[in-house]
Image (cartoon, rainbow, N blue to C red):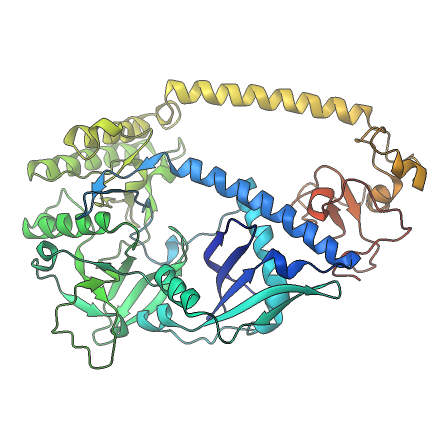
Length: 520
């Protein structure tokens, strides 16, 4: 069984010809794998299985990506860059953080499961080329972003999926990857004139990284000379406007000395980070292109939305509501519009103090109406919803429209569950499966699809009553049992059962024995 090392996705994209590419960071090395369907045209039986599996995984991943794009459309940017174009801004709900902020999701949702399944499929033949363990050294921010990329192409030969290193990738590809993976924006003169301290990325050591918001990136750094710790917030090259707005507003907050007040808490802007183009670069030179902003870190931050729960003591919720309301008042008293009022942009530190973050400017559907984005009215609309949710964590966190939608979804789920129960009642008992033969396989279209052939049921009979399979992970997709599944006859098979969909089959094979790719 091939065991993949831990990895973090840096970039993943599709093309219009059913190809895709995946860039990951694994054990301190970067790998870029290109999948071209033309290189998967092995005409052997095993090769055709590989082609079908790739097409199935790709189809699901594309559908999941489309679902994600539709969800992202609910967050719109109200910010304009120098060319007066609106730009969509990533949410930075947990942007200001210390290492404890980074959390792995307990379970994959449906969309991420399909995308991750394709990632694992692509990376499996690459596993032998990845170092067995990380180097253990802490790189500078410069080295972290400029570490070499190993380029590989996926192909099939003699019925096997394999990778081949491309030691001379086209210049257009390497330049494109640098554009995607190395963040940098150009600052306008008005922002440069603010005379904010600038730091070379070569003088900052990476202490920890996080994947929220994506892609995976450094979040906590220290200066090599004074060991001072900062939160690193990389820029987004595709949307410079939010960064420029945040720099301008945080500089205004500092000039008005709002950080010294007892009734206001937000991170301090400590400086701007630039990449050194050569060893002769001097920190005394003003750099127009920056890679990130440095902020003072919040100790053990937790987004306020995670604490909107009846189990949170009422006295804490009341204090947070009072403090949050007052901080928005302080901003407005000083002529500052927050511009992104929502629950995720209030953070609670280790001492249960609430902080306000993210001044990039945007509106989020459900929190602020588009027509009043980046106005004081919009700030109060979003903040008002936060205050209501703190007062009533159950009823106050959902609008009437959302409650109605949730009730409709519950009703649909109950109908689906009833239909599944009816199908199960019509399915023959597993203790007396029908005998499978060539004739029965050929007649599969006319037979009851819910009734699996004997081959499908063998493993369940052997393990029946010996363990609870509700939380056991099976198949290449590493998910629980669902739908029609096929058992592997490998004696020591770790996955045991495989979903028909993941195998890209509609009926069980006719052979007496069947082995998965890892057991063959």
